[in-house]
Image (cartoon, rainbow, N blue to C red; front, side):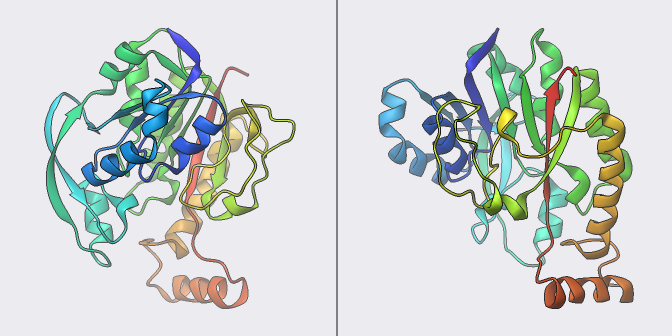
Length: 276
């Protein structure tokens, strides 16, 4: 059953997005695998939990229920992951340790809590697991967002295309890429288009505005795929872990970005909307 008052925050991390969704007036189911972050969130949101507005699920999302080894990156907790490719990329700069944590399938969450109005997913390389789980329910979130493979170092173009193919098969027909590096420029509309007006600024580590409050233009799948090709190329040239970053061309591009444009490499969330 679709619940228009519900947002699912899959990859709660430090609770920044969860706090925003609660302030907007939505009920929230937040999923987080890192036990230390869960403990901190239970203290921070004790009142909302008691009121029944927030449910925190302390588990990783996996193919099936059980125990899994979570790679925890204490130096950059947002990079904790089940994906060995992410660990390999980030181990050049940060150290990981491993914890055994409970895991469950996203289908279980949908059965227990219903289908959310908006589904936000950011679980470092595993984002398509909750998206594929939507095949098991008749209704779909009106809006969803994932951290796209366009800015993932180990992804091929086939994996980027697979994101669009899966979303299209589920009924999503309009798309937006959001540059997370530029979220501090995002402005919440007033009067609001989603829930309450909150105000304040967004950080690059947050997911930012969602649904009708996204400031950009919704694209057709053809337009979005064309943009994805360009974003993928830019990442390979100058993004973190980009395959051509160490080449003379990549080095020149990185220097130009840093010294002339004064921009750090970006990463992108892909938002999708049901129907036309």
